Length: 73
Image (tube, rainbow, N blue to C red; front, side, top):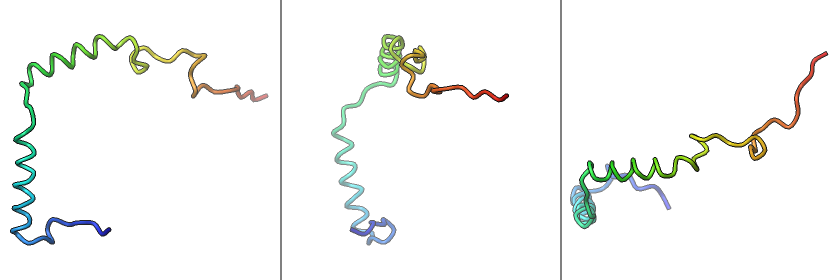
């Protein structure tokens, strides 16, 4: 299926697509940013102990640990 380029569509089709998108967006449940950001912050703080980017990966479970060392003599 070829890619659809908006600029190739007639103006009427562009407007139909825009109206369809706006109808979808108006149905979305919206929340205040201040409330959402507080929930996100709490979630991050609760789960930070499990986060390998924060906690780190134990050496015995690290899949990227070098298997051997290089010795130059």
